[in-house]
Image (cartoon, rainbow, N blue to C red; front, side, top):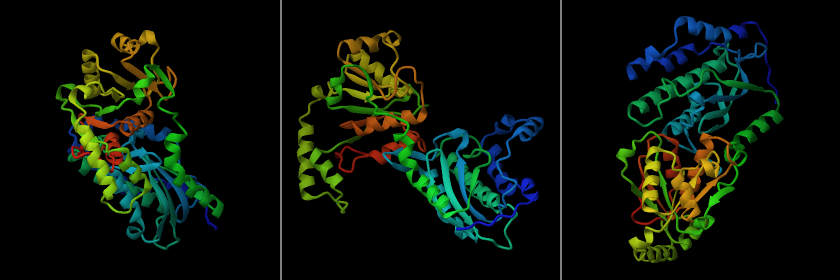
Length: 404
């Protein structure tokens, strides 16, 4: 593979190609949010920012054609496009819109070939090949990326108006993007491999087992766990817990892992489900009240549930995404529950590590995967938790199960 590049001084000054699309990204912000204009920096501040902003384009590269590995980051590095579940990127509606737009990029811009891409929760990687054409812009790469970002910004604003996306401002993107020129077949294959492995590396390279560190009654992990999740930002006063699902028996889960090709469970699986539900019916309310509740207990509604559990003396498992505090810094009621054998605190990281959003997602995934039944408070549309719940809903679940 070869990639001819013609260096020229005009490349340095042509970085702002696609300005029309970036203008489209900002258009309509004032209408969506009346105070947006007031939040905009002054002309002097924008000039100062532009003067000190690092130049991301390479003056020695001709961006009118060639093969490029491009990274586009979400605004404020927020996880707004979906979630990583296992080793797959599970996209929300905004993430799916980005995926569809990338798939059709070549149709909208002749001479543009999308070789490979991945939409991650907070960024996008794409390998673009731009053919040499007489009607290409001097900075064709910037033109195509700018139009793509502008189109997604329009979709984002429409979704935001309907309450279906996370509000991160007038655009879901960080300013600009990062690019690498691809000049050899070896480089191309390396970037393609990097894209394919990106979801796997998202968690496995960062986080250890959620149970790596513990304090309290470890035996609670062997009990029938009831999970509870709720989004950040929801008022505790508005808490109305609802059942999301009860998992079917182990026979049905084994059949699911075997990879049946039909949507309907086999007769053996149906019998297993019926037997499991009959057993569940005899699992009386008194027994249920003794099942430990597992959660990160970080959102307001989750903390409200923890307060109720402590008041009733009920057993629970609390996951700390940022490390378990020292015993002397625990809430007295939590520390006392641990000493009495009614509570277990677990974390994937040592004490004092600190909060990390992706690790919090990793811990919520553990809650959803390891609970016999899952209850929820408010789940905000478009947020990471919604993607997790939809992706991890068991294929064989009880009749009470329903999507949030």
